[in-house]
Length: 312
Image 1 (tube, helix red, strand yellow):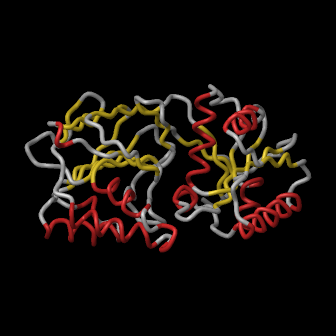
Image 2 (spheres, rainbow, N blue to C red; image 1 turned 90 degrees about the vertical axis):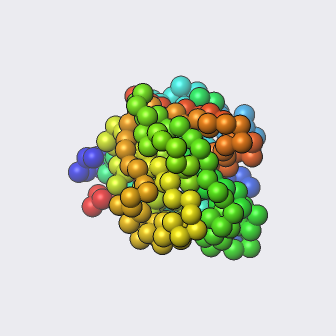
Image 3 (cartoon, helix red, strand yellow; image 1 turned 135 degrees about the vertical axis):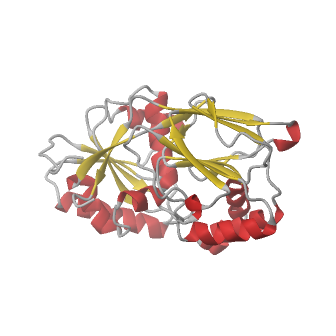
């Protein structure tokens, strides 16, 4: 990470959600005023509507700094488009103003959750290299991807997110924890089987970032710039083990449990032993509705650069 923000020149591409409501629209306007006040560079603010407009806006980021206004889903969408258009390494540093529900990428990076404070960091913060993972369907992972109970939890949380907000994840986790019996999976990291025995798996997590669900420290030791993906496999499927795991997870102590295996690598494969062990996948908070029996991921050689507070 650099110690100084540098004296970047040129204009800045600012991307916001075209579907924002009036309240969020007011916040976006305030953020843009803050961005203008802390930099002499011109802002090219775009709110693309269609996918074609969005892809064109991202393509215009070549050689420019970028500020994304939105939550984890907005960051994921931006980097997915960057990857799909083969633009990795061709865009400048990316600033984030977190306007979502969980904002886990911002939390893990130390970016302020206050929109005006985050706006200043988005243009003047230091730069930190981050990894990017892609799966065998072409989907990218910016923060965390789950198979097993955490994916089920997010699926259940989606039913009540509009009512409960951030608390929806806790409700979904409780429901999934009470109803899921585990999956028999083979997990391979860099060609080596990990926790490859007869025990069922409760959850498999691949992490670049540290938290999910608005601050739950699912991978407290993960580092997005160390050239590795942290892989956590939880086995405890008994009612007592599930409760213990949930309590430890809230405090980030679950990685020390005997029924948890922790490793890291660059290429990961998860396979169901039988068709009835097909699993859901949750990528950066978005759950695939169809269950799968195999999925693989690899850490790309080319990552991206995030603006973070200088003190991070």
